[in-house]
Image 1 (cartoon, helix red, strand yellow):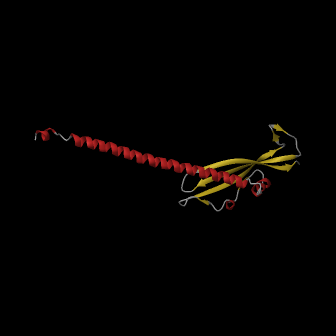
Image 2 (cartoon, one colour):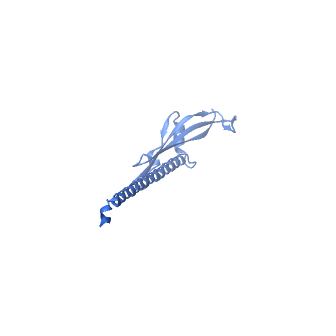
Length: 158
């Protein structure tokens, strides 16, 4: 009976402290996994909008269809919005999200002669220079990417 009188509940206090430490480790592990999931999702969104902007540039500057560049060539000094139906339908991604792309073509000027290997060459042609700006957005997120590319269209000198 003398053994029971010496016990003061130390085991209970130590076990409660250990339980608290294990709980804190568990909560921090859950928070870290949630953050990792968000980072992975944002990485996927970033890749989607990057590819969307590149795809829009490729479509507008395709050698098979230069109608948008031709429209911009006939309306110098203007910024031409590529018609929205050119990119429709918007690409469905997942969970109701859609990837929406748009593009504009801007006339940047006329170059008298082409530049080859950093040397200007004389030619019987001028070159109209256009800047194509493609913008891609993912609905239901703030993911967005803008890409720019150029195009030179050969025209006879006047």
